[in-house]
Length: 111
Image (cartoon, rainbow, N blue to C red; front, side, top):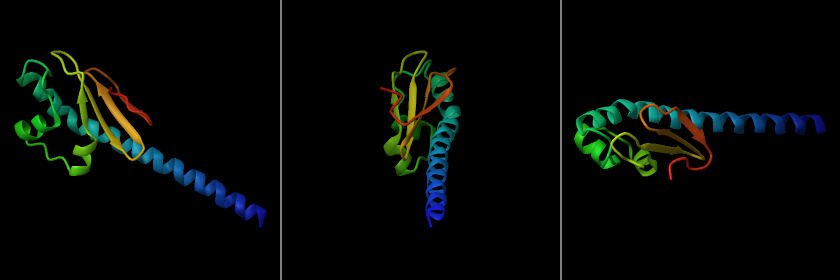
């Protein structure tokens, strides 16, 4: 009986870890999907100043579902940089600037 409970407990821990990994990967994928649009915005506007989720939707026809729009934040926009962040469940993914690596965390990255 104890062994069965231990096995169930280990299975639950592994399932939770897999779900968290999936959420982190999904958020990072959403950032990758936005990269070409963010790049186009930077080229068309000589930088990233003024870039917002609404501008990406209106000017580039980006079709973001309501869940994504509600968790997408764009901060720190300037002529050469930005921080784009999306949350999926308990995970955040973000990219700081056009050369930045995509980061994932359980706490907000862009502030």
